[in-house]
Image (cartoon, rainbow, N blue to C red):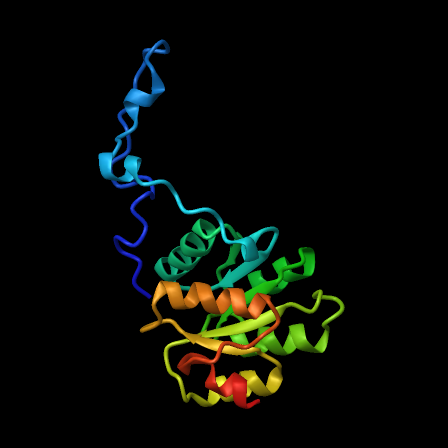
Length: 187
């Protein structure tokens, strides 16, 4: 997924405002303001996103941050887990509407997590689970579909807008009809 320059209203975290000891200083003068971003109004949150909780389970920090940021900007309430053990603890403690679950992770992989969730649906509040992978015909993807995943998304090659449309479709109870979810449609 490529999100660079897709969302011009994101705060500039690379160049934070300098610290000051003057308490009377107007805080708005400390924030770097991009005139183009200031002129553009931020997009309204998606109506589908209202009140929806998503758990992103991804061991790669950059990928996890990208998914969390993209979905948060769309208006979803997004949480993250760094591996399968962390994911199961969070899913047991909180109800999520959708889980984006990486397949290959340390400690407990995505298939083990999926199997645990699907074999104890009441305990885990029966969430929609979509697998994240880098390989579309992988045997692990087929196994995930057999275990109850609703679909899969390729981490590489999926455009951010397509991911957002697909997330909205999954949350609406349907399966997207695009090339990253063909196995789901056939199941």
